[in-house]
Image 1 (spheres, rainbow, N blue to C red):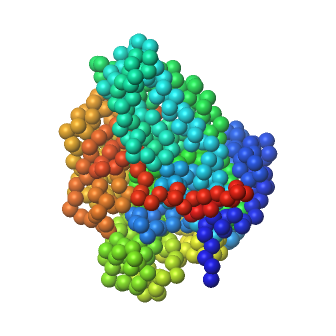
Image 2: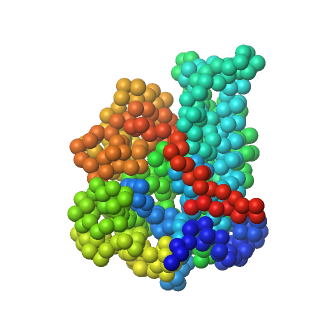
Length: 557
């Protein structure tokens, strides 16, 4: 039997006109800006004009990622389609994929199998140009900063204390650390510089956390680009860059509307990584989803220690959102990997390894139910190689924590394969919850770091290197001590060491750098060897991507 690739399934689909999709969730044509037949941007006035109570907010998150894969986006899409199958008005809110992993590690990130958002090719590539606009706004600020220095530097910016980096939406380790401005006075001022990947840039965070155009401009103006000779922060507002940056983003800031393979409305907008940024789609897209559906199904990047933590501690806090339920995605294969099984052997039944790897799942679940006090269901993303004994073991261990398990077969069956999960999510959404954060904002920076590390990662504590401790003291003195924390940490472990799988104990998280993202409204803490500009792997996904003479793309997952 031929197993079709994700792109084959997507290319064979018959999408509905986007006007019809919009109409299905009550969006009139006056609010739609079409990008062809199957994509649209939505006028920001829609959020102001709509008079409807919010639906239930459901977060889809996952165990610690492994090379075996978890299927978080696939589950998110399939769950929404499954909700529709049982007669519920559900919509999806997702992040946009970054070209970095599309051409680097992944090949595509629009779901998989029969649980995808379409047009899959567009979404994975340039889509509606949002990421280009974010990169352009970022680099305009960089250009204005260096031009200010070249033209006399009236703000007395110390070129040794510039914190603003350029950005490009591609994995390119060569650009992490560079020297620019060479070639004499006409070509600028020589200095050390570097690039972030666009999805790690502060512009992306500002874009995702802004509530409207006015808030966007205000946040952009607060961005700190560097410091003066006497250590005073210099902002984008002082460089008079915020207005022009807002102009570049004025269309991008409008949420995008597409559909799933089963024609469920999907809002896709913004795409920060959760290992080096805050990992959630835009607040505006989430708010639209809450207005347009009785259930808004959304996801946050990587494992629950990263994406879910930031969704709950940063996004929900800033936007005043209260989730009704959390879905924890896992696979038997990934859990066996956490139990020490090599990737080549994951298809064989191995109950001992599964039991050894299960603490990873259980710790994530307990974080959701005990730290954040939210109802939770475990969704096992089904593989044909999973045995009944393996599935029974997962169910038994989860039930000991008072959490049900639902087998998700959405990859193979679409919405029909998500019905069992949908029914459990509906049940959970009716339960009372006592949603709380893992830390309070009025604590010191070190106390907040310690809370995240001990409560969410289950570390013994946090260690600040001398540089980070000095930065903490400076940030506190500048009045930024009451901001939430955005942890930049490896996605492969609860710890800051990617080699420590499962649920490690007896470790300390080392913070080597602290930086304020004043526009976003949080402090970024860099731990371990995490990079804000990833590199390409030995065999990039780009090697498999091609296009024929008729323009048909292949190899895009």
